[in-house]
Length: 260
Image 1 (tube, rainbow, N blue to C red):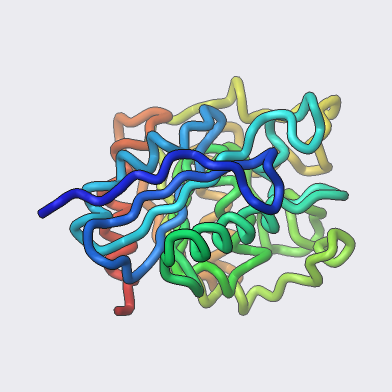
Image 2 (tube, one colour):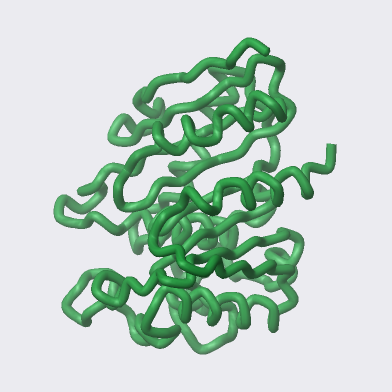
């Protein structure tokens, strides 16, 4: 079969500080998967990794680039929180989708969402504030997590979403989204995922979900399941912080929830 086409990074029409790339399958796309990069900021690499599968399954791929230093010059992690007091990265992804739909005719409506590491932080928080936009969700090795049980402010919890302009999250909304949460059994990460009170993103409870990525993901899974969210949980033995072993399970999960 003839291969599809990579759409190189281009500036976002609504805010040129951000950009996005895409992959258009050889045949007409019937669904869209959004891929969110980690701290390495390599959306093109993610798209290339998923492109063969995308061709085989008539799937458009869209991947935003969230550069470091936007909106605050010294902040490299803001996008992972999705919502800042005066800025919404959720709105940026919405605008990326509008661009991709308008320029390339990719399918509109809800999409499947994949995130690795910092991208997994973004992905599960985006799904909390835009659950109607997400058809299914795969999160791989997030360093920090957002819980649904009451008593915590954003981003550790959801109690103050109304103050951030997003209204209040109802657990029933995210219960409509099937979720697969994955991590490598050797993915420790304690040297980089712990947040100190001196950091801008610190909030009370920032480190309460566990010491390692494995522990923090287990906390997320248990908390979301207690709220009625359908969460699959996969720990792959012998794998550290590497997204490649999780690509095929993610693709199988998206296929299982295709709904076409």
